[in-house]
Length: 432
Image (tube, rainbow, N blue to C red; front, side, top):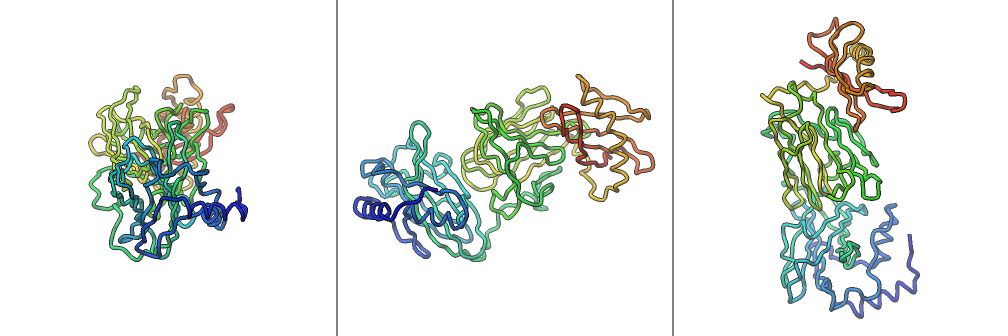
C-alpha cells in the first residue's frame, strides 16, 4: 500500500480546506465526515484489507467539473436499513449522460459497488435533488460506514471524487427481507440455495455445483475467468452465489446449467431465479437445441427480486448477462408438477457403494463414447448415462438395485482427470 508522508498529508489537508467547493451537510447520527485518503487507508489497514480508495490527483474536480456538486450528504440507519443520501448541491441539473458510481464499505469491507445508471432514483441529477440508496439490512449494533462517489471517463476508467464516513447505530427493526424459502412462497417445485451444499464461504470458483444445477464462471475478454464465490452477498446472513461479471463482451458468459434428469420428462419447464444486482442482470434461457426460448431482465434497484423463465420444450441452460449479481435461490418446476426426489440424506452407505459400483462401468463407457448413448451393464440391468463435458459431471439416473426400495437410483460422478477419464463420487439418490 502506498502511504502518504506527513508533509503530503498536510498539503492535501490545506488544499482541501482552501479550494474545495464541496460542503457536507450534518448527518442524523454521529455526524458524517468527509474522508482524507490517509484516514480511509488507515481504516483499511486496521481491517487487513487492500487499498480502499484514492482521491483524485490535483484539482481534477473543481467548480468547473460536472461532478463537483455531487456529494454524499448523509449516512444513517433507517428502520434497520443502511441509508446513504447522494445529493446535487448545485443549482443546475447534471447531464443524464454523466457516468458515475458508488462504492460502500461496511466495517472496513467493500460490500457494494453501484453504477448510477442502475438506480431507480435519478433525482440526484436535478438541482438540489437527492436520492436515498438502501443496499441492505444491517445487523443490530454499531457500524462504521464508508462510501465513495466514483467518476467514469469515456474510456471506462474510474476514479473516486468524494468520500465520506459515518459511525451509525442500528437497532432492532420490524423490517423483514422477503424470503423466497417462506412456506407461503407460491412456487410449486424444488428449490436450492448455496447453503444446501456449502457450510462456509468459498472463493475463486470456476464453477459451483448444486446437485443437478451447475453454475459456471464467465470468461473475460483476456481469456481469464471471472470466478464465482460462495458468500453472503445479499446481506441476509445466508450464503449466496456471487457472480461478479458476465457482460455481453465476455468470451463465454456465466451460465446456469440444468440436468436432463431433474424431471421425469427431461429438462425443467419453469425456472425461478431469486437475485440481487448492483449493476444490471438479464437471464436468457435456452432449450436442448440451443435456441433461446425466454428472457427476463431484472428491474433496477437493490432489493431481492425473482425472475421467472419458462418453456414447454424445457430449459437446458441460462446465460447470465450483467455484473455484480447475487443469486439467493434457484427453483424449478417439472411438467405436470412431478419432481424427482432430492437426495435422501439418510441414504445408507451400502446403497451408495452399490449404486456407485453398478453404475461406474456403464457411466465410464458412456462418457468415453463419441455419442454418449445409453448402454447396459454386465448384469443386464437397465442403466442410462449422461455426460456433460462442459461441467465434467456424469449423471447415471437408472441404476436398479436389488434388495432396496422399489425404484431406481441415480449417481453423479465428477470428472477428476480428463486424460484417464477418472471420476470421483459426488452424490446419489432415489428416483421414484
